[in-house]
Image 1 (cartoon, rainbow, N blue to C red):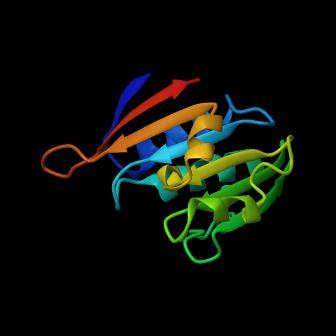
Image 2 (cartoon, one colour; image 1 turned 90 degrees about the vertical axis):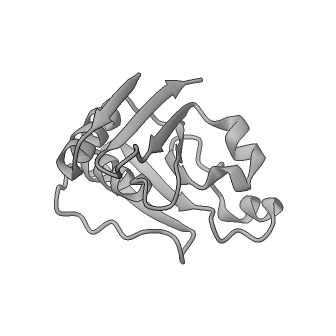
Length: 139
């Protein structure tokens, strides 16, 4: 699926739509350059899964993993940007709960996460910098 997201509201709507397709055990990779909207998309997904549009969803850049309990089950939001070594991903426990929905930014830093992905979402900033082009594909 390919789609153009003209603004933040469209990104939030796409995240909400995407959240309805996720199931326990899904591992979602959010790819894109810095500023492409990975965290904004993850926020929309998490808020939809939690059924709480005002939920505080901080970037997991410094914590590496932010856990959430939702009516749909546990959700883990990870950012691997600061990972020093791909082997460190095991310590994060992303694969420990088979019923969790896992959202991962900067997954290319851990090839085993990329290999385990069930959904890959690519976000790209188009020429001119307005909006985002998104491509989502199931594996």
